Image (tube, rainbow, N blue to C red):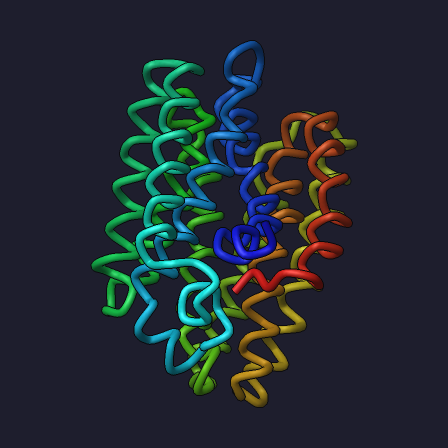
Length: 280
């Protein structure tokens, strides 16, 4: 079980549960009835992507990260690929139960995840590929409504920056990359706090969450910008992954305070489990 948890980065799946909440809130389409299944679809597709990532990187990990499940021999490449395929199929099927449009979006998301892990990751289009995955995950909860596109763009921009910086996890990064990531965090925080809000209470909640996001992620990225060594880049990457949740809370709080409060309750669990299983 621990091997499967490490292979799929299962605790980090908590950081995608809010994507569909963001999309639903921005589109004015609350998650009700069968649509309540959509966060589970997101989590399954995320874990599938992590398993496929390790399968695709098995030869590189044998050199750089021999402790990972596949190079350490705790799971075979074929079994890891089977886990990825099974979770991906479950994610698409669950979304299809929630609605025909959601099923089509989930299928596109599964294709984007596969393209990133197998083709795009090592090339210059890698960060954009990962950003597309996060944007589609937000749109999964939006019921196809374009009103959710700006919120999806905010999370996609954050994802682009974190992914670009994560390329320095083993050998260190360039200062310019870390600085650009920190600048993107500042812009994402401003965008999440400045959008349309329903009331002063919604405004205050969005401001508080965006400030928490900027402090958590921005501090780590600023340290990496000053000294872009591999350990500090890894720390900034972890902060960026975990920081997805307060950013999601800020985007949801502009529209639905109850959903934002429920999502905020996930934050302690993300930090707790993040200390036990690396998200990177």
